[in-house]
Image (cartoon, rainbow, N blue to C red; front, side, top):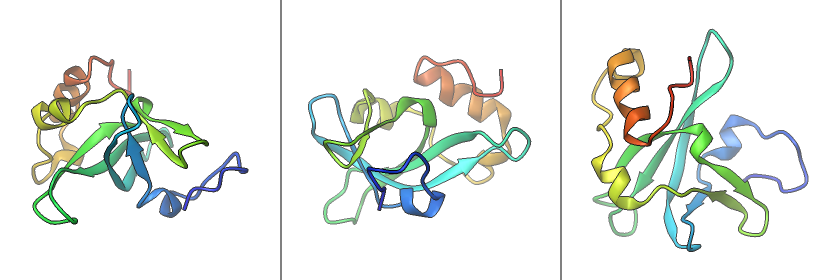
Length: 116
């Protein structure tokens, strides 16, 4: 659970937080965050989306800067659409060690990679 009155949040508390679209619709849920070991920056939120009752869905790492915490919703807000999530590179095995994959992912959301 993300605490609305705190400036900091534990990475474990972000897991399970709902992500809302620009129209307040439920886009998905954050499963975990990925932190760059060298810089200490949060690079991605791995987000589950689609499916029914938690089954048959998919997951995609999304750049952390695409998310903004919204106290009124008690979750994160994003302008990312489900179509963008579906079109983004899938998180294949080893993605967290593949700069080419990371570059393509950031490009798919129209962002400069976090390490630049």
